Length: 310
Image (cartoon, rainbow, N blue to C red; front, side, top):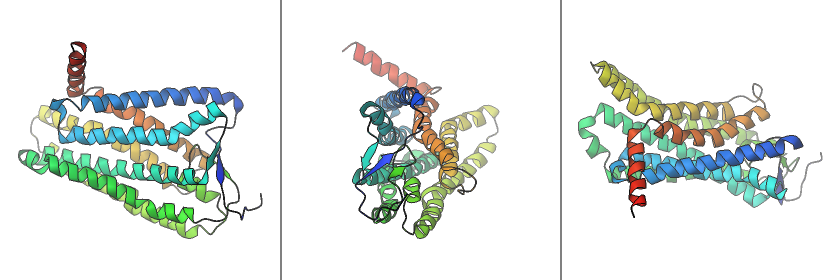
């Protein structure tokens, strides 16, 4: 296809699959997943309103639920709209906004997980100073810093992509506007942007939060091993198990999606990792954090009881 030198007004989102027979099953599956994501994360947010859960851990968990709902809505809604309306086009401006919003929310998500890891570190390694170190004011500052820094980190990439003037195709091989598929169809010289994306994505957006979270768990594991009783060690590990599970799931998909050389993994495979990242992880988060959490179950029962007798 000949390169388009005129300003791009819209893109065509290819979607998950081109097979007409798979469109209805994909729509129903995505719709079901999206509804579960909304219901599960709203349940977490409602439970966090209970005064007994006004703690740093559940404050950050509430932030994580908001991020999961927002990220899933931004990415999955296009699949649903495309099936209902039969229109796979998205304007250039809307595509850039979606790309920036997804990048920002993903970056904020990683930083919130760092804050949650730090909270677990203080709770286990410095329990006597926990309420002083993790006060309401400090938690609010940490969360605000995560939201602001996460939003700022992706601005350079969005600005550079917005300045692209030439595209070899208007079809994006993805189910939403993500930065790498957009770069792939540009006929501008993208070598600098790809290097910047890999270096900053590796060092700042992904690797730095990963190392900070990993560092917290080094201290946590060291503190747990020093506990003499097996029941004490098990209890301490249990307080971190949910967060650790989410961290492993998220970073596994992110490393596979963005930091794997293109020669070793196809764009189609990266699309599947992106689907897992935007659908499965937000779906699993409420399950992981609340399935065996007695505090959340107790809080929900109390809220339901109060609603029943009003």
